Image 1 (tube, rainbow, N blue to C red):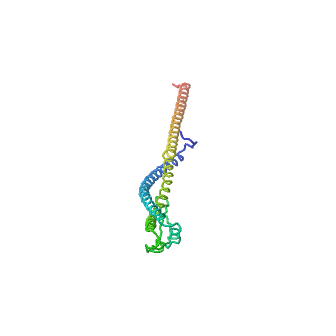
Image 2: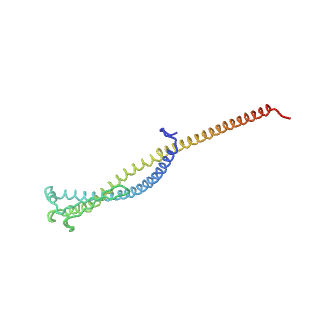
Image 3: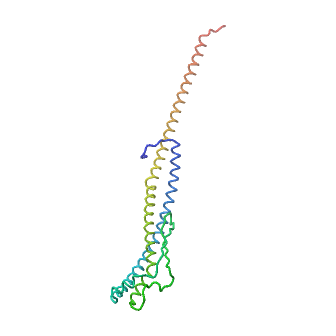
Length: 234
């Protein structure tokens, strides 16, 4: 039985059948989109796991070297060595459409291509461990940027997967069953009305037939009466 009051007419039945066909086609498309989003999401998660491992290892290496350098150098000399960096970075952000989801993409460019520009100090009064720390940080920076991009992508994909899943479930368990129930209800009503009309027509036909029989019988009786009343001449 449909949840809402509907008008059991053939026009309404045709409209509901059209809506049901559209809903079923949309349900299939949304399921395909959900499956592809899940595939993309799993690829991003695997890349995220590998990037996080590399970033953590790089940061641990940089932190260890920096800790040794801080133990060998005075705080003033360490601060002065890192106070004025030579290299600068320009960061650009664009977007890529992945299954109707705009995910960010980061690109960075250094102002100089000379790898020696990464060290903002001279080598005479600094420790070699500080060089190792700066070099480790410069190497892990690219992975950190890619990790930020991948984590944001996984977050956006997870939100889109959840929205798509809710739409698929709403169509599969609510909308489509409601429309199928309404179509069944209207079809039963129309069949019931058609049977009632058939029975009504049969009754009318029987009544007309009975009236015709009665009229014919009355006409025959009048003819017989007239025949009996007419005198016979010899």
